[in-house]
Every structure is written in structure tokens, then in C-alpha cells.
Image 1 (tube, rainbow, N blue to C red):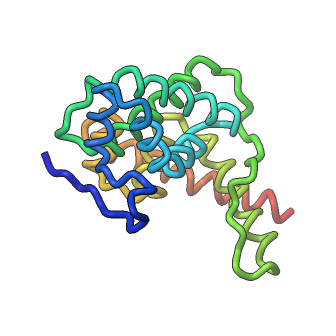
Image 2 (cartoon, rainbow, N blue to C red):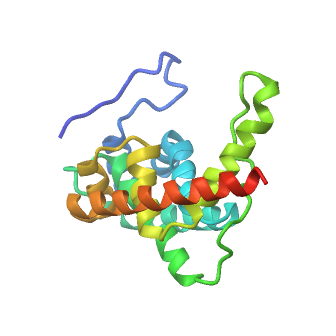
Length: 197
């Protein structure tokens, strides 16, 4: 098992243990290790939850459920996977479970503050509008297709890594991405045309 601890250069003020070391310390009873682990990956996990969920509230609830689940099941982590991938999978599954429980969601909610500020303020409105259109189109995909498209096309995971994250064969990821991209293309064209009327 490879240890990837990196010295942070702050004289130990920050924890420089690797993810695997932090998880092992948590399982062994270290009261701070899990908090440090979550802090190290929080931005990625939040963006994953936000992209997979219909609303920011659902994303926050799913992320909380996922982190509680990870906290409880840390002893079952197998070191043949990266800790970040393990956490990612738990977050995606919590989001999909929440979607299944709440089937009566609107199909196109407005995004809540996820657009990054563009460098040129004159482009701010078009960036926000584009972000809203893409978000609306993503929310119209089936949850499993959205999870695959987000993992491969937005987060840059390989098909094989996405398969491991989502717990499905690579062929399933490929077909979900292909169907999702095809539907997205049509939805984006429709939403763009509707916005230009």
C-alpha cells in the first residue's frame, strides 16, 4: 500500500498524513483524522454532490448522509482503491438514493450559486446563462446517466475509473455516457433555441 503523505511546509500546523494513513488513524480511534480527511476533499465532494443532485439542499443532505456513512463504514475500506474514489462513490450513491426517494422533483430547477466569476465582468451574464442552460439540461437526464456524464465529461475520470466509482462495468458507463450525451445535445439545442425566442 503506497503512502502519499506530502510535507505541507507549515511546521506541522496542517496534517501531512496521506489519505490512507488518515483513514487508518480514524479507524484506530483518532478523533481528528476523519475531519482532516474530509477537509482535504470537501470541495471535490461538494461539487460532485451538487452536480449529481437536483438542488443545493438535496446535495447538502446527500453529502451529509454520505459523510456519516463513510465515517461509520471506514473500517470496510479496501486499500486497493484510492480514498478519494471511495468517498466519491459514497457521495454519488447517496445522491442517487436521495433522488430515488424524492421522485417528485421539478425537472429544471435554477442553479444556486455554483457559477464561477468570469475574469471579464462583461461576460458574467452569458457565463451564468450558459451555466443555467447546462445545469437544466443535466437535470433532465436520468440520474444514472447524469452521474456517468458528470464523472467522465465534467470531472475527467476515465471510463474505467468512472465504472469503479459508480460500481458498474465500463460498458455500462460507456452506454450511459453515449445515451446521456445524445440526450444532452438535443436538450441543449432546445434550451438554447427557447432562450433565443
